[in-house]
Length: 452
Image 1 (cartoon, rainbow, N blue to C red):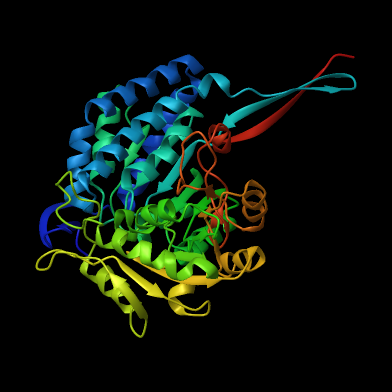
Image 2 (image 1 turned 60 degrees about the vertical axis):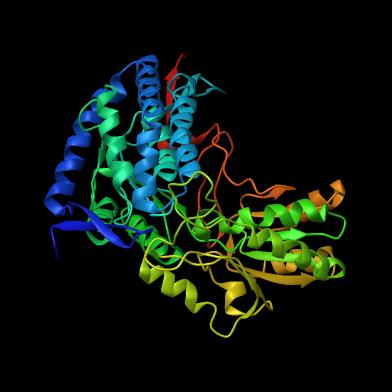
């Protein structure tokens, strides 16, 4: 295996940089350095850790344009989205900078003394990040982990490591101690697997496919090591007849074609009440055709390319034998382009069951509330979803009936750093973000003080 990784710009199909591919010795050295750094970091006063994270946030804020430009080149994200993603990292750091001073235990009344609980950091946390949202997903792990007093070793995806590498440099510029937040580039079979097997990595956070996540969970189980998993999705966008159909149709492309559909939360199944099914498709077609696919460096672009030629072939394979209703437009020539596509499907079709991870949406009709809930739950996944209705009672009933970790009514919101995020069923284990996220990177210690 080569000792470097070649990065390719997905908008041009051309290689533009080489980065190191870490071996086992380098991973172990990073973990050893993290162990030392973590002890000193955890010993700091909570206010000092909070100040350090705020300083990190300010440095990220000052480099938003630089980080966004890296994401455009490395990941093909539209520049508007990339700027939002970089700003989001700073917001997440600012939010969790408040956590060190709020990791409050309990005083529990017991006979014969005083019982007190403490939140103790795990030590070193290994975070494995996917290629689709390199900055944002990384921050959901490292910000609360650092706030709780841990050190972090982060493995970015081989395809899209540049913003993670730069964030590691910016952490040092902000004054975080050497070894506290390290980025190690390399393959999952070496770096990621070592996070799982190394005894000094006391927790693993993994975002990626359900197949790989299952292996990560099994390895962590053998080590009695806690793990958080955010995995695949096949989320439903449910449109009832009483919804604002024009608004629902106008918003539907963004729910599934954002980031070229390379999003675990993509609403890749569009369930429409049968009585308005034809009308909704009439409204949807111009919205899809208006979705602007092109140069990710242009502020007018809605969607860039897919991440690689191999992934483009995988996405295209889902259209074999499919009933394509209509498509949008995409550039030709160099780059890994794919036109937004709407497919008419039946519940058992592959395209209605498996995660495409591309700009393809399967449309299915339903008859009533019970049928909508049944179809929404008719996959192994349960990550996200939307439902559109003007009936509050229906919204509550359907939201409670759909087995997904995140749902949005009359919108397509999935992730807010102040609210918990995670999936049910094959979409994962545990939750990220929200007011309690820092506690998820601690172990509860119970201490009894005898007074009798």
